[in-house]
Length: 348
Image 1 (cartoon, rainbow, N blue to C red):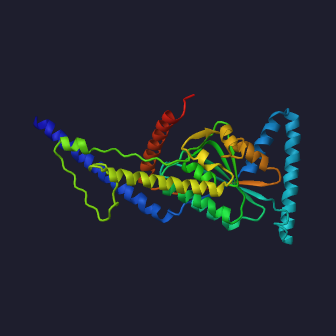
Image 2: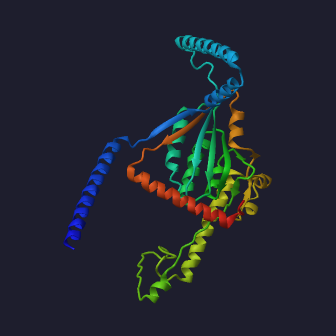
Image 3: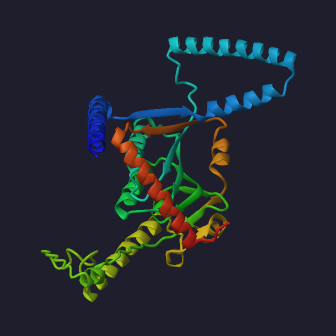
């Protein structure tokens, strides 16, 4: 027995040392990362990527001798282009043949819309260099979420619209509820045939454990200053007056949502589409919720002729703790989305 107790004490000491080392290591990592919290803006030339892929496929179809000739011709071509670029730079003609640019932003939204932080940086970066002949494409995917989060996300896109920059929203999978609030800011919405569009409505639910607590002889006291500081509560006893006020707040939010969508897309029959229902892409086109059917891939390929297509991504450096909690939050979001999908649309 004494041997077991000594062994247990030894294990406890080892565990304490390991935990202490882990805590110290975490603190050191956080201190070193504190100076690098700004994040990184990454620009990817999608036009060049597509051109390289096209060339790779073309070369793969040639035989050995033809490939050698092709590589020789390409080397000569690149050398000539570099020579011309150098000569133009010396003459100050570097921008004389500048192509119009398509700035591509990606937004894959979660329930709390925390991705708006990166979107803010990306929009600001584009506004800093955009030219009158440029345009923006947003590849959007979101089932919606909290009102204030998606309201801010839509406002970030509104900054582009206010500067008269053409915006095309591309939806391959889903732009519903708050996601559609963002989408309708665009001058044009392109949807894949079976993408989920719409759900212009507001929903809120809250469990109440008051009867359970009463059965356990547990009292809950809630004190507020202001008649409607709390309407419905999780633990206290809800009143009919509180329920009525809660419903009024939901209807007010829905009204603001409808007004916003109608302002962005005035040709919509807002009363017909703002029922909380969602539609697939082709159905959404018939109702005026989108302007064209197609994928983001076809959209971007069509824009590459005579333009530089550039993807802008802001990568926020995360602390070690944020990475762990962020992964857990993303897993919860995926679980909620699966529940929503099972309840709101047929499985395929």
